[in-house]
Amino acid sequence: MPLFSLEDLADATAVVRTFVPATPAYAWPLLRDRTGVEVVVKHENHTPTGAFKARGVLVYLDGLRKRGALPRGVVSATRGNHGQAVAVAAARNGIPAVIVVPVGNSVEKNAAMVGFGAELIVAGADFDESRATAARIAEDRGYHFVPAFHADIVRGVASYAHELFQAARGLDVVYVPIGMGSGICGLITVRDLLGLDTEIVGVVAEQAPAFALSFEAGHAVPTNTARTFADGMACRDPQAGPLAIIQAGAARIVRVSEAAIAEAIRIYYTDTHNLAEGAGAAPLAALIGERERYAGKRAGVILSGGNIDASMFADILQGRTPAL
Image (cartoon, one colour):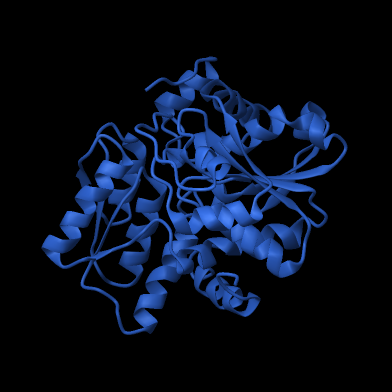
């Protein structure tokens, strides 16, 4: 059974539209010339938070409100974009939000979360340790823990998939980054509901390969670390729910190196003058690595966010690859 119907998606999109307008999908000629593939970029870097995440959390909290279960406050863990989404959705519902981030998290993403109204707490060496701290705060304060993956979150995020498939007909493949799985699961579900035969290819960082390992093994395979500068893909503990959807609906999962991600960030800037954070650039890096497979065809790539710190972006433009 799909996570939702097209009617459910329409209802979710109405909620999303209260804050996030439809984002563009552009076929950039210089990317075509570079790859030999017509590349349609879905610009989720153009949302009011600079990333796709707000779509999902708006729908999630709206669902709680409609069920009479809106909590006294919310808490979650993040490397940045999910936290901004939680902060925005909480503020729009008149409740406080606490966001836990790991030590060394993006300075500018931290500032954005505070700017959107969140109380920021720094704790943990990585996302999964921050998530454990957030769970303890939820219990101590009586707040609701907002997960990174939930059917309502996927339904909201899936609004970008529907926009893409409506704007760019006849896509042979779509490359999408995998963090906790909401983006790729939304794409798979909408593709199936529309009866399309477009391949969906997930993308992970070589240094955060948990979803790739799990996809290949057929069951969850956690990793000890997820040390990638592409923080939106820094998952080391895949959940069973998204993994099952990905296994059933994705063509494959591609690993990309830190150097390839950095190069894709440079390419986005030179060929389109768009900012892409690491996770946002990873799909383009994966397509470039597989460009011969789709020569002369039409590919979509999800530029999932553009929230990259200025210092990191400057280093990348100088030809360097960030190291953690």
